[in-house]
Image 1 (cartoon, rainbow, N blue to C red):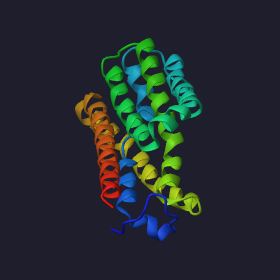
Image 2 (image 1 turned 90 degrees about the vertical axis):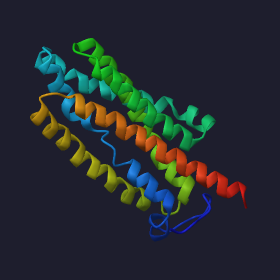
Image 3 (image 1 turned 45 degrees about the vertical axis):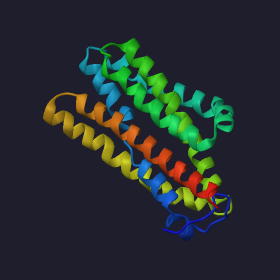
Image 4 (image 1 turned 90 degrees about the horizontal axis):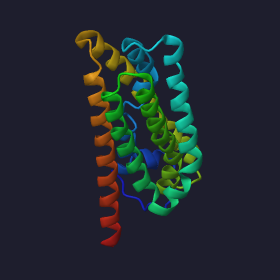
Length: 202
């Protein structure tokens, strides 16, 4: 892997060969989109009517909108990579609400809380890319990075559905979502720590 200063301006080819890009790519493979596909069926399975259960997706949207527009100041104060780590941890923690919920209002609470951290994640990821690789090729770099999101979007909900069909329970998909978000937080935090240590040692 090539080593570059976080403030350097890189081409797409340079960026994708760095360890920092690899770390972001792996972190973005997480199963963020499992609730978008499976939260409504879960609610219906627990006795919530279909016409009401679909509102849970709207609740995710509300939380996401708040996260995108109102968490920016926090990111600037705590540092963007730290904020990204916090968003992963927040999403992981929010799944605990889903795990113990079996009626509409607790599930709506999960949807809003998850949406809040999801929105913060969506908003901060491009800014982190600019911080690490520069603004000149940021659009292209983000485009390459988001292929990992597409892969995660395809695999995560499908794997969750297959697991549910086999086990007749959402416990494993929820637990896997928690674990994947925690792992993403750890690898981003470790990469940031290593980069700071290298910078301090120069």
